[in-house]
Amino acid sequence: MKYNVAIIGAGPGGYVAAIRMAQLKMTVVLIEERDLGGVCLNRGCIPTKALYSATKLIERAESASTMGISFAAPSVDLPALATWKEGVVSRLVSGVATLLKANKATVISARGTIASHGRIDLSTGDTVEAERIVVATGSFPVEIPGFNFDNPRVWSSDDALALTEVPDRLLVIGGGVIGLEIATIYNRLGSKVTILEMMAEILPGIDLDRRTIATLKRSLKEQGITIRTDTAATSLEETKSGAVIHTKTGDMFPADRVLLAVGRRPNSRGIGLEKVGIEPDRRGFIEVDEDLQTSVPGMYAIGDIVPGPMLAHRASNDALVLAVYLATGKHSGRDRVIPQAIFTDPEVSSVGLSEARAKKEGIEVIVGRFPYAALGKALGMNEAGGFFQVVAEANSHRLIGAQIIGADASSLIAEASVAVQNNLPLEAIADSVHAHPTLPEGMKEAAEAALGRAIHAVNR
Ligand code: NAI
Image (cartoon, rainbow, N blue to C red; front, top):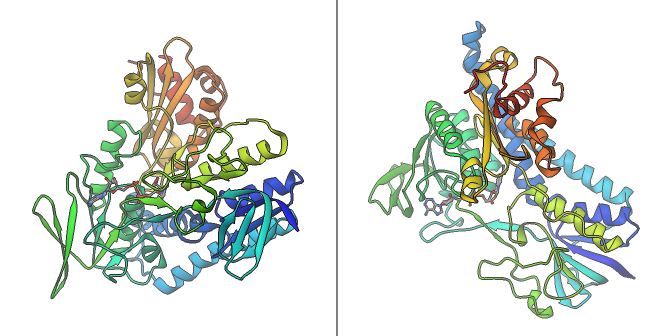
């Protein structure tokens, strides 16, 4: 049988594409060599968030004493925690399998390699034929000289999430998203965590305002996490009592385990791209046009393998946009705004432009800020740290960006995402009634503050 579409890779790009394409009456085959759900479900977003929420209990139990409730020191049963986390993952993975089946998408468990235009060879010896091919093979963690994942001392995020041990001293190389999220989890579990970041600031790849970064750094330090910026790790030396990590600055850091979180690269090698004449760029990314078509007609690419933020929801959006294009020829939203959510303590989220970036682009802006400490709900939750910030065009009041640092920031950014995506003005948020007492009131008050009329903060 010749399918309408063959998709290689069943992560949040590939499996979402398969479901939506099948809904749109295309015949679809999804080829995956490991588990459905890709890195995100199996070894990324989902296990991290499961461990984030589980270990949050440790931190909540410790801080509860300020509310007059005290607990004994928590005891963590690591294998039980790992089993629970695996249960969350497998429930979602089997949910994806059910959805694919219900939508009549064919799933093949094998490694797929592009053989020619419209043909994919499978590791099982079979061949799949399709009118179009979608490459959704995702990305892998990179190594740097002196550190490789074959060394048991060196952890990838996969190793850290496997939860085999809680090292006394965990050294994290890379103050990006993965480094910070895993540092947060292991710090709560009891490791002494040090983060080395070679750039001048943590999260250098993300458009966050200085105030947001400063607030995050302060909080990480208060939790006992050491952060060293301008510090590039260069080599690892084994010693009698563990390892010592040397840096470009000449410093030495002792460690029992080293988490290497220095970025990810696209999985574009060994999948037969050269057979059809697709040439990835120097870093391995595949360029696509606004309809996600590569330089070769009939060949498409979505998700981490395409330049842009390496985020699950970006991949899923690519998938939805591509499905609509293939079914109807309509261009439908490659340029949608992509929010970012970082699961540190406190959480950080953002969408659109930061204040600094907007100014750099020459946009005249008005900015509104509102602290969690002025929200009754946040105080009642004993989560008073952080703030909401909105950035709007001065003339039109159109919201062009927002950042939140504080409790549940990852969820609270959704309202701003809707506003930025739909060109809504500050008034759309400020003049909508938000239930009281809730955290989203912070977004309304920030919009009011930008308009110079916050109620629960002094307007400046
Ligand atoms: P990243 O690119 O976000 O951060 C890597 C960091 O390592 C950079 O800040 C870089 O300057 C630093 N670095 C590189 N070499 C170094 C050295 N020798 N010594 C010290 N520091 C060094 O990459 P990360 O954290 O591995 O994440 C990979 C991708 O996955 C990112 O695109 C990220 O956005 C995405 N991701 C997003 C999540 C979220 O949004 N919640 C969660 C996990 C991953």
